[in-house]
Picture 1 (cartoon, rainbow, N blue to C red):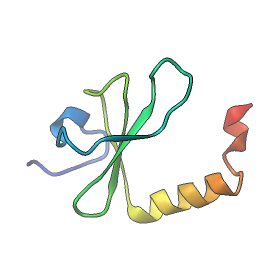
Picture 2: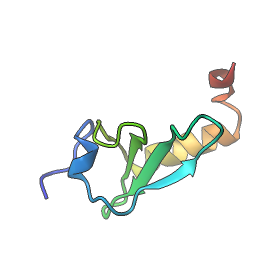
Picture 3: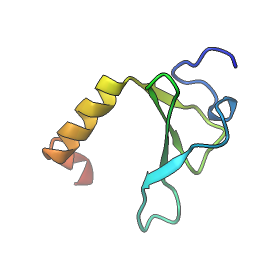
Amino acid sequence: MDPIYNGMPANDLPAEGWYKPWSGGNGGNCIEAMKLSDGRVAVRQSADPEGPALIYTPGEIAAFIRGAKAGQADFLLT
């Protein structure tokens, strides 16, 4: 496999291993995430599975989750 990089086509990553941890009544358009073998996390839009994958380090994902749990992303809901 070629090197994994931020913005790479999501379909260049393994087809197996994508999960929809966040889903709602939005017609099936969800965020999908995959934990990579080196600990990083790939995120893609389920409506565009061949589109770009955003690649995050474990620290970035942890900071996002902590911040979301603390309400720091609530502004996105209004």
